Image (cartoon, rainbow, N blue to C red; front, side):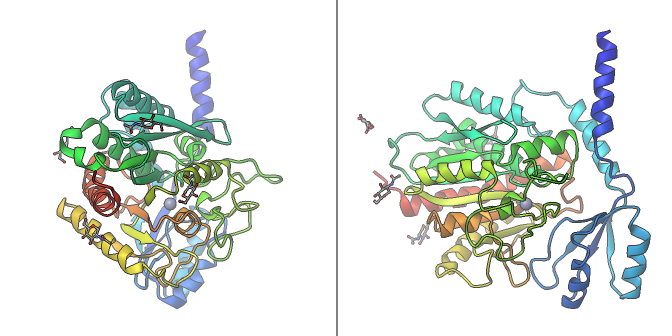
Length: 415
Ligand SMILES: *[C@@H]1O[C@H](CO)[C@@H](O)[C@H](O)[C@H]1NC(C)=O
Ligand SMILES: *[C@@H]1O[C@H](CO)[C@@H](O)[C@H](O)[C@H]1NC(C)=O
Ligand SMILES: *[C@@H]1O[C@H](CO)[C@@H](O)[C@H](O)[C@H]1NC(C)=O
Ligand SMILES: CC(=O)N[C@H]1CO[C@H](CO)[C@@H](O)[C@@H]1O
Ligand SMILES: [Zn+2]
């Protein structure tokens, strides 16, 4: 009986997974005119823009369904738009990933970064650390997600009684960008469990880290649709769930690079802060804004290190400081074996997007140093095999070390 039940449940789970069989990812290096043509497809069924070119000559990757492919290829030919095939069949990678996720032992065991962890495993890890490292770690629930998941911030503080400068970190605002929560977990792991090597980063600075800012979307991307991006809030009408949480912050909301169409991947939400997950982080950031000196939010992919503004191509008055620090971060991660990041404002000439968390933290919460990191530039895009997790997060941790050292050197009382 039980076996049959398990089989039935498994069947249901498998049946509800979205298939990307025959979907291809095409990579373009479009001219300005070509980009205009290609952008017409950005909200069409069967087309998924995996990224946006950040600068002239940058890459644009578009996933196309098998149904749309013949027509699209003809269109490209007629308009003399060249491309390369980045991925022949997205489902092949997803199948391999599912197999690996299932074959690799799950928690409880020492954290190992050899697979992507589920939201419940991530929270369990935080609890384990809070129990084992009572002098260093406390947890704070900042609220529940739309589907009632606990959003837990880990506070790493070796003392100072709440007077030290704070570095605020999050990841996973976009569900399918799995390397982002993995990066936040590695930072936690290194700051807490590798204090011999990293004690200097926590002896004068407090770290507040939210591993998954979109837990419902993240889980949905594990169980139903690997390439889900948005939150999972129920629409007032229609069948398109969720909003792009990185268009939903209340700073120049909807002014640029966002959509008011519910089905769009960049739907900004019905109003600023329509998404409860963002409200939760907003309130937490408000409570600690006096001490927060640096905000760092992880995404993938493309190897970009971006700072405000995203809503306009205007530069903030302190852009030199932001640029210089980003360059130092990049040098450190390159020295650790990473490939170089493109550095600049989120708008970077071509692609404005208002309502992002980095703009909000700087523009509203007054966190001068605010960055978005788009990790990895492999041909896998979001479908980064688990074997890449450890090298990726190790390399970028050296950049995180530069961020933390900068905050310590510039903002701590050094008492
Ligand atoms: C920390 O703050 C509390 C209350 O604000 C105070 O009672 C305590 O003495 C402080 N501890 C240190 C080490 O400063
Ligand atoms: C601790 O940090 C050092 C220095 O970055 C690194 O070489 C080592 O691999 C880390 N150890 C663990 C267990 O992560
Ligand atoms: C932040 O600092 C300002 C001015 O120093 C003070 O008025 C305010 O109460 C502080 N807010 C918090 C949340 O500590
Ligand atoms: C403004 C300021 O004091 N900047 C300093 C921050 O700390 C770094 C060292 O990590 C210095 O090089 C900067 O001059
Ligand atoms: Zn993203």
